[in-house]
Image 1 (cartoon, helix red, strand yellow):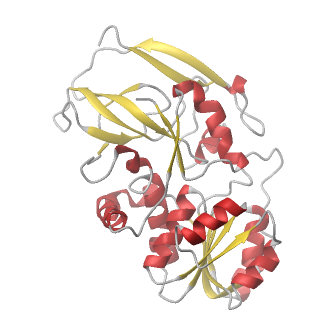
Image 2 (cartoon, helix red, strand yellow):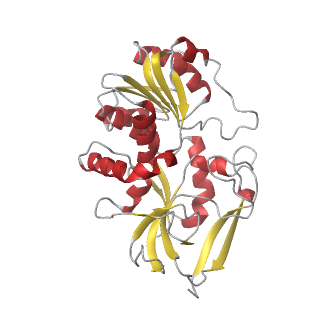
Image 3 (cartoon, rainbow, N blue to C red):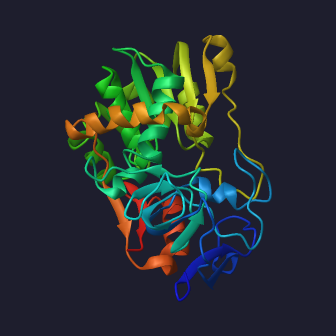
Length: 336
């Protein structure tokens, strides 16, 4: 593989609060020859996700902590350029955890083939990838929705939240979204079919939940944490399910994470609060992707791609967009 230069973004520092430019190092290295069993992937799109902020800390989460100097971890989709692995052929499209770089070499164990006849390649980072699968696992497997129930989603205009709301509608639920700004809220109602929305930038959460959920909340799918989680806990019904997917309001805190003061509502309402990671259902992904693909083809599932041009140099600023609420849809960076 001589003469192929791979550009990479590596973790150079542990951020306190929001990541800054000095936390990144841009490097380049020559791609080595493949060994038996290895695959060379040219990365086309890099997923930009809130979980990245946690991966930058010096502690293990559901994956090991990154070491300083490591290529930044990221979900990716790309094309097999060369293969010494019988499971993959040159020209195959694949999804994997190949990091913020232009090329990746792997043993193929963490790669999944992406059928571009079924959907565009970017969809495997969106509805048929981390966004759709996270929503499916959290809502269906953890939340166990029943027709007629009220489902409230925080971060509802984000890639996961928008899928949660649409899947809830498919399952016959009444769906309420919490989002920031008139544009996002209009999108949830007009394009995604949410039944009601709360614009947290222009309405108090308590008042908004009282207005939109007069009969209480059966499932709360939380992507935000903090005061949003607290407000929702105050309105849960008996045997409600509170699904913890993320807490983006807390990821850049320099103080300890703010926990819910209304947690006794879980006791009073005989309710359940449960966190999850979509990787726990990896064996079920093919069946889930098949169902997600059908909903997508039928026009029941829609989430726009928010694609940033500019290559690897765009990564630091693109990551920050997640924490300012600037992104709209599934955020990713296009390399090729």
